[in-house]
Image (cartoon, rainbow, N blue to C red; front, side, top):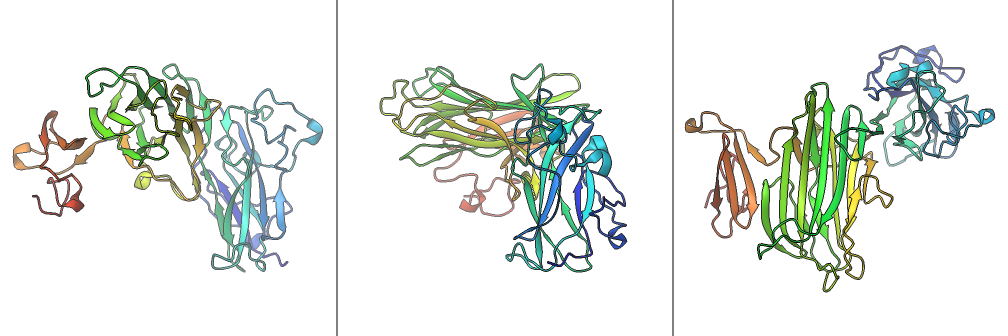
Length: 448
């Protein structure tokens, strides 16, 4: 193994600096590198520590820190916090902390070390690749003596990147994390905080809510999502399509941006869908909700119900818009995921209360994968998640146009707060590819 004379820069945070590490650092030819990335953005943080390793695929080139123990001597595999059982004799003194290698409370570090330019860890990519792995050691208070706890580790088994290791060339391994922490907010039942955004989510079944075809309130499952920011910052919520899938039936894909209000769905096991969104009047807090009610054509006794029905969706939120309605590649971003069982394998009704991060994890927080995950719909707090059209005719004087497909051939067109519901001709939809185009929502396709 020949160790290259250039360095791999480990970067978390927003520090621009020229830095060297300890005795494992690369010689002076690798210094003079300026790095800029985003900080963790968590409050009450005094220090953040990480364990690092570089591998050529067959052996470790070098490592810093012990992924099994924290700097305080706690078991790193546990959900650490102020009540940790500590064994000072086994404390990890080799971990890389932002107080030494970065900006301390911001959680960013710069560390420079060598790589192996002769052994390829990933032959699917061009050049000689090394694998860079990072673990979270802990998130600590200002004194560095207590792990703050109630944070969710984005890298419980280590997060890895493949990085080119070429002779006489500096390479960058940039890890970008948004770490989630539990939050206790007065207007949330159970909430989670990531950066400066607070979110809550759940799925509940109500015995009588949406109206069925007979006009009576019937069994309904409610997928609820709410988020907020503070200090005058904007909030944007993101949701995927909501899928209802049962064994033996074609899945139903529900668009949560259609509406608002109730619309009929004529496909088992749904009889209707209701969508609701809005902004709460809380001073200096941009808090909004986005809820979807699913009318369930299911028997409480289980008679004739389809088996193995699940409701699935994902969501997130941000104070800054997410590019292309999704999480970026090479980024672990917080995600709320719903995977709620409605019936079991015998068709018996399972629908109940599913709070965020319940023991069965039917509604839970997790991190996006490094490939990136797509969110189909967005709702900027105070706006409308339905299809928005920016164009206008002279008579509308530039007023915004909102168009929503209500289902059943009905379309709602809203201009300047006034709306009208129209029935589309049979066989036509809002989909431009099928030949129906409502100007100015699309640019091509002839109207029937």
